[in-house]
Image 1 (cartoon, rainbow, N blue to C red):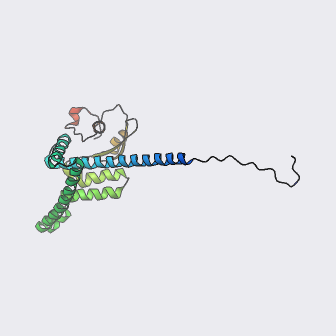
Image 2: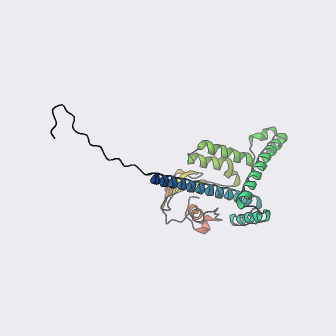
Image 3: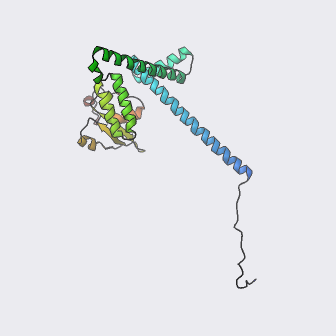
Length: 223
């Protein structure tokens, strides 16, 4: 049929596809399942982090290694007839309370003995200062490394700090350091997957790794 001048051409409706109620319900169920799985994964990761923190507290208190601390935590939980995660939370809460109390006692002892002693922070005060500076540094890993070395680890005998990031191919990138020369840091800015380092040992074992002597171990590493 011919159109007359000035008349509008015939309109055709574009096909519109709508999801059925069954498809919408299936999609909603899938989204909810994925959300629950993500929450469960996050909760599991948070739980593991709390347990590892409790192990670290036991390492400091008992003077043992991470493996022995893990066994002690499991043994204590069995004796107390409670989940390991619940005991880990109790240990962390008690440690936090003890640290706050100790901070106050050390400050009072220092100021009572020598009013000028407040200028020399006690170890726990240094740790709190390190924590504060790390929070202030945020994502600046170079500042974080410096805060850790200056306010906490140097007093414990550490000569340097290196912060590494692991790549998807198991390579290592140096993201922050303190105590090393710029030339040495530049040489170690990237470590291929096949090169053995202290950081790679910790990454492989997924736990605190201590090397008594770098010279004897033969590990060519920045730290």
